[in-house]
Image (cartoon, rainbow, N blue to C red; front, side, top):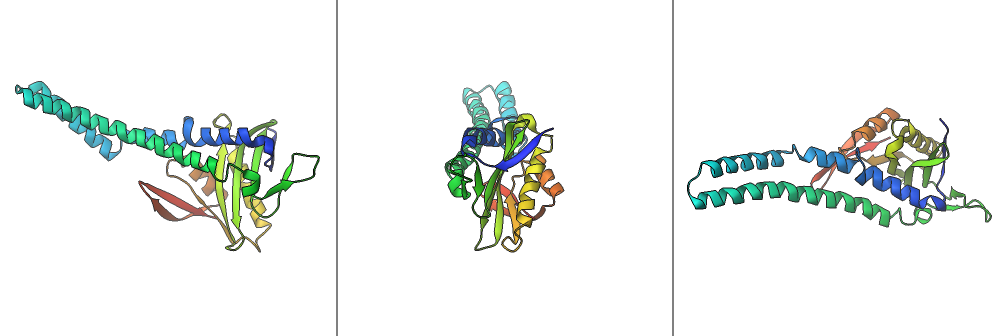
Length: 232
């Protein structure tokens, strides 16, 4: 395995955006896919299935046209609710990813303080403590990790980490995170700790972060979601 971790370059935009979208929203194993799969067995979904089955039973046994009509309406409404929730989940998760693509990921050099190494090269280097590193596996960009440091608070955030779905299980994600942690350890006078948010629908990422040394410290709440917070 030939793995090289280096700072982001302008030419990496397309690959980084694609890996981020695939890893978070569109490919099997992404948080979005896992969340949608789990939705089939949510309590609200199971309740709707029960209502649909009961409505069908009523329809079969009823003799009154009104009762039959009501049972059909109840059956369609219960299944329609499951479908509506599913559609809202897809839209919400995708909008969260697209929001990041329009915020820090839109102008990576500016947001993460990356400056040209010299005028004749497209290579960039961190001007301060923040950075976005990419991982090249056999000369192909397959992952990245983003680190955002607010010097006034001495807190660093592992803001994003994604690996191409086709290159998972090779230790690339943990190598990226360890590279970030190594960078932070060199600046202990400026960085008190590192934190990150990770969704419960990212079991692989949670296991990897804990293996590297992150500890769960609290759970933040946002609408419809409980987001674990990890600290190093």
